[in-house]
Amino acid sequence: MRLTARAVADLAGGTLRGDSSVEVTGIATPGTATSSSVVFVDDPKRFDEALASAAGIIIAGRFAEPDSGRQASGAAPKPDSDAPAMAGRPSNLPGAVLVVCDNPRLAFARVGRRLTAPPPPTPGIDQAAAVDPSVTLGVGVSVGPRAVVDAGAFIGDRVAVGPGTHIGRGVRIGADCVLRSNVTVYPGTEIGARVVVHAGTVLGSDGFGYVRDEATGAYEAFPQVGRLVIEDDVELGALCTVDRGALGETRIAAGAKLDNQVHVAHNVRIGRNVVIAAQTGIAGSSVIEDDVVVAGQVGIADHVRIESGAILGAQCGVPTGKVIRGPGVLFWGTPARPIRQYLKELAALARLVKKQAAGSKQ
Image (cartoon, rainbow, N blue to C red):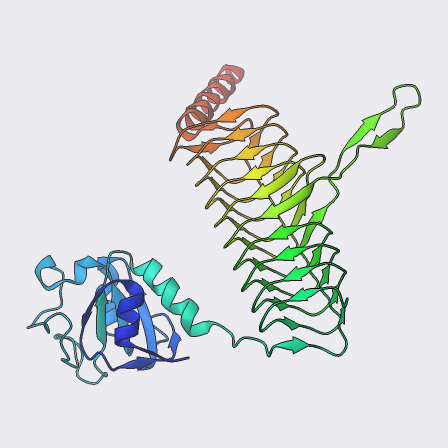
């Protein structure tokens, strides 16, 4: 994949300064860049390092504007000009094109995704795959070796099904989805468009629900007959498990991103653009509203509600039935509470221990 400087500026939504025809083929750090690389800098203190690199294109923040006071010395080229080099750049290095935008990290992510995207798999069904004749296949679908697609499934246009993946009866998968190797999708699961599911993830499995017989002490499985719905643009990491609803549904809303080894129990609802880091567990019937951030190894008990915009710090715990509210507020500890309260409690505990230690010496 190649991108011109003009294409990079368009993806970044930024101002182009330099030769619009310069092409790059990859991404790099300033220390490893070549003339065919694009780098980014979002810290004014690192701007000189980026300028001194061999990068062909530099994506920078607004601090790189000529009137910002942070521009390298000398006369800078006018916006969208074809001047080949940045003023103040070492003469022994090729001139870089500068793309100035509001969020260089986001722009770099978009450009990098375009440059590093693997080529789409060749459409078609591998001879070692097993696809039931009743399956509806869209245009450009690819099914890898040893994959199995059961009766009544619907596979949308340009979906890529990886090796060893099993798609159950009646599953519906929207256009442009990617299911990596050894993914298991239980019957009745519905997946939207542009969803990415990484290797080993299980979708729509039975929830962990049992009723105890007090007379015998034995546990009887509660019916798990609901479904799982995953909306558009969701990404699920490797080895995640998302259970279907018991009687209703489990739902992951559009734009949510789950890291590796996240467990989502039955009847859970995850809102739009929620981010959940690795090894987090969410128990049944909990609700995580839009734009919540959940760090790694967080434990969320059943019937919890995490309201929009809250942030759960690493390894914190949320007990049954608790409501967490506060957009932009960081919660920490077990039970989870606002970080300021948590730090005050730690400080008070430290003072108490110190006082007790001093008293024992007397």
